[in-house]
Length: 489
Image (cartoon, rainbow, N blue to C red; front, side):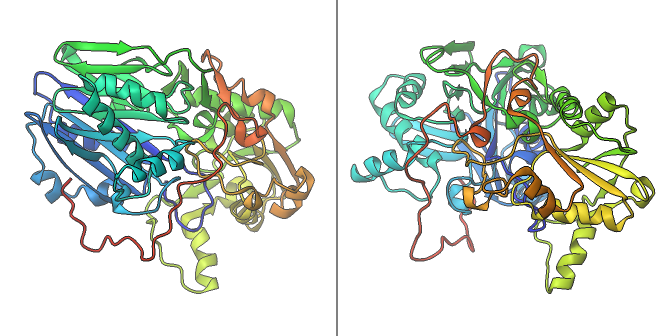
């Protein structure tokens, strides 16, 4: 997500989608458009779609929200007779903000073409990129998706089919990746052996075809029936013959999905690894009430990610639940802030407290995280100014004290308020009366129906995969220009 400068919200890298209809009756442009809207929360920097019409790949991508990029004119100009398509929304955690990093990434080679959508971060991308550059590969962007694309192309030239090329590429790449790949005849989904990021399979009505998506909410948006999650390490192929999979890389690593998918990233109505995200957040609130009880008059949530956990806290504690904030949904990402006074006023334009809910009351405020602490302090100050007598801050995640290397833009440790500060010190810095974080022990128990382990490296510093020694951040002599982009893929 690319929030306003008013927030310090954490962001997840991408959302991926692919759809195949052997009957050709689905309007692929409309379907991908709907799916990308459903996945917009996973990335607001750029978006795009690629379409397959009789084996010819074309499409459109650009910087901006789905509604900004896919205007009525753009949608009308795209081909509406495709039988296969992919879509992508992006927030950059690796690579610069440039249209050259937007996806789907379409590559052409002597055996055809492919469109690639990627969610996650590779820990060995810099090493692989240097190796590719030394062999003559020329990179146009700075994302690790382009590394995957070059490896896929090289392996496709040496193998009899695309699925074998995907398998060989998985032998070389390390880290987090949920992929959707489209060729002239096949739609493929692949997930890293740890299953860091979600990826699921849906079936179109009347068995007409299949869809792959980062979250089940995107399947709902196109009328597809959720079938199952792609297993960690699995390669799933959809084509005219139906659905089949390759499990060579399955069970080669522990299944450790990012636990923050349940805390913050995913939409509440999505089901990931058998657990409804809404239920997981309710459970987080219940655990918080058990760990950090307090005498109070009302429980409120910080919109939007704290609302479900706040409801769970209220249910467990018996304290009434209330709506404490109104969030303005019409404030754009590029809201202009001039002087200091305008910046202060803009806080209330985006978020404002409801005085009748909090005035004269002891308030429990539930949020999903504290990153740098600046947004938390502003939010608590709004409650104080609205008349709250006490503010007890409860966080539905443990303290962030380490960076993430697998697709979350958690800042460097020096920028994290929990690094170098005790809970009591953070409590004073943000201005709350008391502060309580969810324990690591309980955060691992949020997804009660999910039979897997979880990556909690940002809380514990213990990662399922060895972190990288370097990053993909590349500095050019001049900024990459997007003033006159060639928008056709």
